[in-house]
Length: 249
Image (cartoon, rainbow, N blue to C red; front, side, top):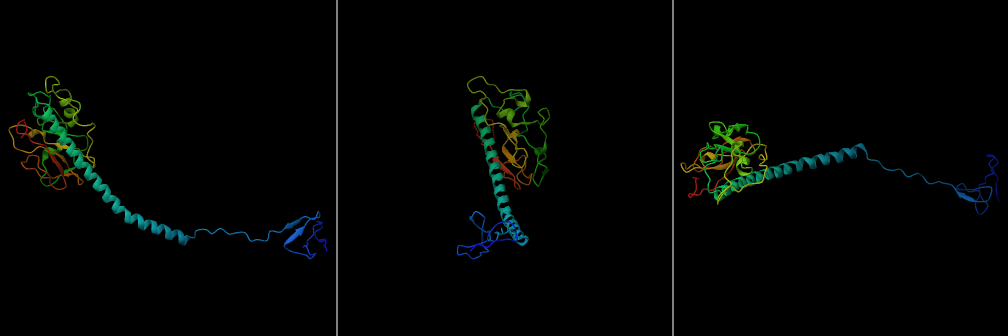
């Protein structure tokens, strides 16, 4: 039995296969049964403010716990790099002394008659302070024309331009054969320069020659003139090899 839905005036019918009315389905005038959409719309759950706060708090706790570990790892990496760098500079000076048999103490011109270099340095800032045991010489600026000349390591070990315009001989059986180290010779991991008390690369002294980094505290705590050098504070040093057969102590 079909029942006309006269109240709507649409000509649609509501019926079931048994002839009984069914609120869950409808039939159009052409007899096609259309199921009514009676399902409830699915509600998508959102993140509440409390849940978001919990997640953010946990993330902050984990980040705070990881930060000291990451900081210690970075500190160890910087120390390891500084140790490697001082050793590399030391090795470069060793090789210079061994291969260049015309070697005289590092001079401003590269010639035996030149003024002896007091200190050789890499690029970088001058360590900010002198701590206990530090010597004023470590603070001297680069100036090959000074009474106590300071020059860049690269000029002597890489480019063969001591003093900015001189040259070690490249002729003969044992000439200057650099470069002895890869350039550039960068600052230490804390942005300060490496320094070498090259003044004592001569036969008339027993003082140590060593490569120095002022370390994490950026203070020099090591003497410039010393026989039996040990690093002061957290300084990092590499003592240059001594060979009694050459013009080194």
